[in-house]
Image 1 (cartoon, rainbow, N blue to C red):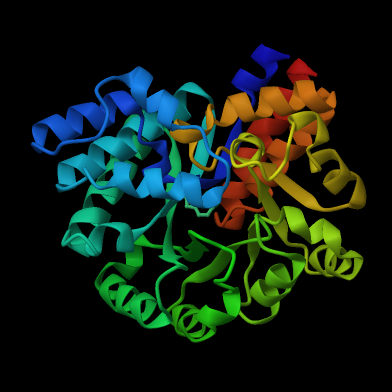
Image 2 (image 1 turned 180 degrees about the vertical axis):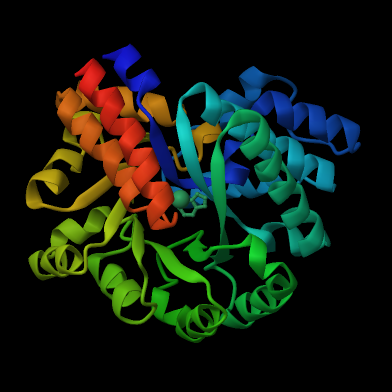
Length: 335
Ligand code: HPA
Ligand SMILES: [Zn+2]
């Protein structure tokens, strides 16, 4: 099963590039930028990466991202993640980035986007991994701040496919960002949002009805509401589920109790993703293999999850078809 997962062609649809920042690279970049970080060793970092909830994690995640300064830093961070994609047979990835985490510190939008997008271009050519970008608004900041970010993104619109909403969910409902989503859609961005990770099913309703999202990031708490489940199925929207993130942030107490199988059985379209792999104990293939073991998933289940990852990506129809053909061939020969 391990080899089947390792070689399974797949896409990753929920990944924060700042959350892929591995301790070793963090040390290297902090050193070359002469920035002090409050850890002396990889062991100390690992000790700090124990979280009770989303906010605990976010405090450490923003601190880590604080060493990223130059275009080269953003390039190195992104290329390092894309190399891991290539090693895991992640054929396509949709990368979220948080411009405000950096612009708030005086780093220009241009520095961030150019570093990330150059790495994506190089990875396409050298690693045969495709990618697109999701610009995420920080929901603990105001809608006015999000509007500023939208404005800053416009000269780079051709490099960005979608907009997302992340950071502290509770107390920051999707309705707070209704106007900026409307404006983002007008600019041609596809809307997605984190909803129902720690927030209730009402937040998922708002993300669908008020923000018009096309895909739900996490969405676990949708299961609290049968009408919502029916609506998500009716609209053919996928959930980007992140098993190891859910246990690390105590959204789920144990992988054995993870609702993923229940979601599938209800008819929801589910994908498997790593969210913030450097912080939550595993890349996407570890998410596949740990949840496979915990829930006794079959090769067919895994094949269908990987198929969803291509089907519900924001790739054009022809690219989706080609990737799914590659996956079908793999499944035929390895089932
Ligand atoms: O899992 C997450 N949830 C909300 N915001 C985030 N920002 C990075 N990761 C996350
Ligand atoms: Zn996330």
